Length: 285
Ligand code: AMP
Image (cartoon, rainbow, N blue to C red; front, side, top):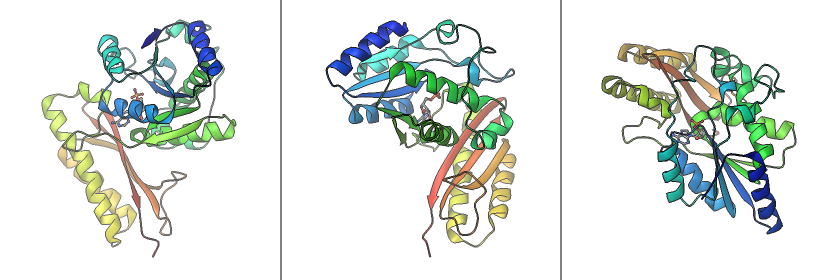
């Protein structure tokens, strides 16, 4: 595996692969890699001749009071995992090289509408930061295909919309969420949880399962299902930010005729903000 910090080196490698007619799959990450990230890598390997993984903790997508400085940075361990998965190149750019003129002078990409809902409502500017860094990384790596986790469902929709709106010649592939055995979605932020909080956090998956059953039973209104789930999270000691049933295509509140649904949740466990989601396809009866 090549470890690349400079954009020029990356561009030279990309050109050599283009000359050899190799296709390239790309997995952007913020590092602290777990098995969920590695599922993306495995999928990427199936989709192209060469795989590039990036590790970049993107300051532009963190709010002023968020965990940018505390975000776990574990480069050596990440490198070994990527080596073991036969990744061709790890791109690890420095913040000053990605944003040489600083954040306030930086051209940005904003996907309207979808970026303002849900996580975008509580984290203003977050999806602008995500769309901008993904656009920049796409221009740096020039992949044919890029893999993103369904764990960050809204993020995946923002990226798909950006790629379509800006006519980027890149195939975006969503990869299912990897969970721990008790249902908790793997996340770098799980490392912030105490043992007790970690146990309580399993209620997120339990609440989504309850909601799925209630949705499929088609007895209670979506508003009632959301309210009951929210109450059960609060009773367990979590602080839900949103618990909502949405149309999976446009993330608008689900209507009775919609059959491709997604349950989306964000909840605080102590100071740690956790997100999760579950897709549901109803029979079109
Ligand atoms: P991050 O490093 O958290 O920015 O995530 C990098 C990529 O890995 C994103 O596309 C995430 O959606 C994806 N990802 C994170 N956690 C998981 C998970 N538990 N299962 C699948 N993909 C994940």
